Structures are given as C-alpha cells and as structure tokens.
Length: 319
Ligand code: AKB
Image (cartoon, rainbow, N blue to C red; front, side, top):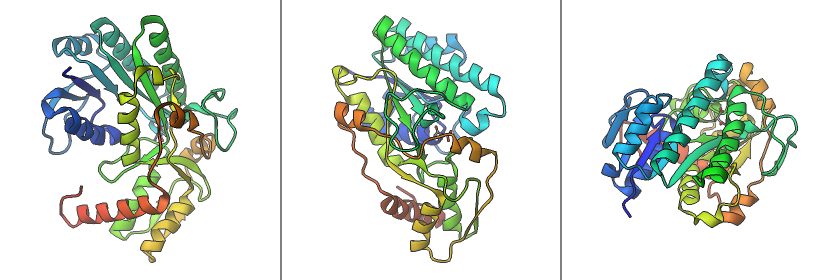
C-alpha cells in the first residue's frame, strides 16, 4: 500500500531531520510537511503551512490527502513552556487532541507521538528509571506530555487507533538547531567549539541528563513505527536511552579533540528543570519489544558533531 505521511512541527530540531528521513523512505511526493511557519531554509518537497490547533484545517488536510500516518511533533518545550504555562498546556493539548481526533475520524493507520524524559519528576530514581515509573512531572511541558501519553493509550484502547510513542531524552544533532529546551546546551556547546569561542553553559557542570544522538533518535522513530502492531505492548510511551552525560563530560570530550576550548558554568532557571529530571533511564522494554539498540557513545557523537559542523562552517555541504 502507498503510504501518505503528514508531519507536524516539521521545522523544529527533530522535525527537520525526520522530514528528510521520511522523504527518503516514502518519496518526496508522499510526505506532507507542515509547520505553523514557512521553512527557514531551502526546502524541497510538499510544504503546507498548518496551525495544528486548527482542528478543521488539520482534518481537511488529512481527509483530502488520504493520510495514512501522522508524525505529530509540534509542541512547546520545557524551558519556553515555563514562561507561559497555561498557553503551553492549551497549545500542546489542543494540538494532540486534534491530531488524535483527525486520525480517528479519517481512519489514519498509525500516529507517532513524541513524549519526553520531562514526564519524570521527584518520584523517579536518579538512575535507570524504569518504564513504568510513577510520573510526577515538574514542568507544564512534562505535564502535557504525561497527559498526552495517557490520551494516546486511551485512543488505542477505546478506538483501536495505533498510536506509538517514545520518551525522547535530549536530542543532539548538527543538522538543525533546538529551541526552547533544557537540553539545548548540548547542541550549542558544539557550535561554540567549532567557532572556537568560549562557551557559557546554563546548567551546572555535573548536571547529568539522558541524551541521544540525532541519528539514533531518527532510527528509533522509524523502527518503532515499522514494528508489527503486536510488538508494541506499551501504549503510553517507551523510554528511549542513548547515552547519559553532564556538561563537564561533553566539554572534556570536545577538549580531547579541540584542546583550547573553554567552558564556564552560569546556571540559570533551566538548571532547576534539569535537576528535576533523571540522570539516566532504562530502555529495556524498547529493546525487548521492538529491538531498540543505540549506536552512538559520547566520543563517537563528538567526532561526528565536530566534523559535520566544521564542514558546514567551511561552506561545504554537510551530510
Ligand atoms: C527539552 O529539553 O525540553 C527537550 C526534552 C528533553 O524533551 N529536549
């Protein structure tokens, strides 16, 4: 069967790279790429400007194009979300419920919903948080993701809608810039290193967080969506782990390749958010159920980040 894919929030950090992966897999003409804003960079494919809080506009797009899969990435993230909690709740929840309803009404086969390590709070152990840990998120973004996981499960149980979800850690990639997250420093630090400028980190040097390299994050997303329906035993969301490090670890890893690089630590309001999240999470359910395995450790990721960003900086085409 010919799939028709719709992606929301496609201009974001993950959306930019996932769009290319989906276009490669399904063909450019089969991927409807949407965002509330037009693409900021050169784009080739089928772009439609869409505010996903507009239920009618979304449902019409799904219906007219006979969409078979939706990847719903549009959301306000943890740090930005704290500046306007009610608006964040309103946008994140309205958008998700619109997607679930459009998918149910128009007979969409599969929906991908990204959750986050932000669903964990003080009840979670610091290390190796199990998939079924009690959720007591400390940010409005985390609250919306935890509620979203339950809505995903509700639509599966009540309507049989095949919604699949991952709890992403901080995602680190060279292709796109993150925006509004607490883990964004881990991308910014590589940009500073390549520009050869000192880096001021907004988290404490020993604030360890779960992270994942972009290539692994994309592979996991495609893999869970490809898995047979029966393999997806967890209908809230799967813990997804890649690696785990603190700012001092990533700084040291960069310094091994760029010895003159310097970092100082000026924690701001984002440190409190990070402190409420676990150091590492246990993704054994994803490994057992649909064969997840990350490929990148810190050293390998640093090599890839620095070489790709250097190529970009020198004006050549990065992969
Ligand atoms: C954020 O920092 O808000 C995100 C996330 C961990 O979901 N990167």
